[in-house]
Length: 55
Image 1 (cartoon, rainbow, N blue to C red):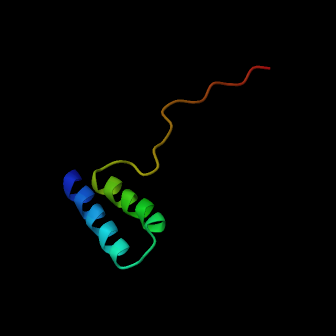
Image 2: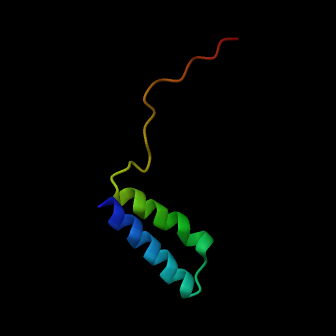
């Protein structure tokens, strides 16, 4: 499923670039698409509390 998501995102990015759309605008969108299809968390949670600041 991961490879299909990457290939689909790459194909869509090339298609939209060929049609004249901005690659800078659509590249992050298709990167999020590929990440979501591979099962990665789009907004990961922190695993531990940050260290307190000592003054």
